Length: 194
Image (spheres, rainbow, N blue to C red):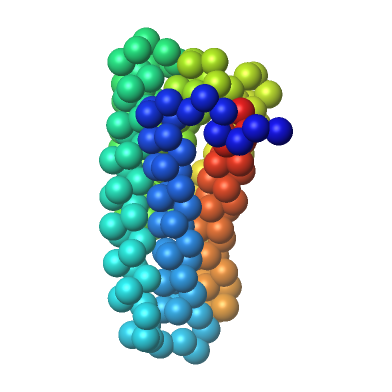
């Protein structure tokens, strides 16, 4: 078993971007846990640090992942990233309207974060598949895991403000952070071993 076999700069960028995404999700989860645990203190020690690390790691993750994915796109390898980004933008507008009008859900940044995360991961999967790095098995497995985590995040997003119990709201907010973190961990392992 060989780890990081023949990694090129774009492969390292996708891997590094996902590693930063994992850090983002871990620190976002830590912030959520400290700030919103039942009977907790939203101004608890460490909350500001956790959310600051999550924010800066998230911005870096997007930049690094985008750079790596774009390198594959420029080389004409994989499904064109522009289509995935256009689909993500259209999905965001539709989801924004549906969640507000149909479900009467107040808009929060989590909706945008869910869509950005899914678009980046599907773009990375498409880039690695197009470059020949991922065979059909890992491609489909990771694509399905991203879809499941995205659907879980959307279900929790819609449900959150309808929950009255503090403990239920806490777990409902934590699940959409834990699920993508698990998917990113699997993605990192699959890429490292491919």
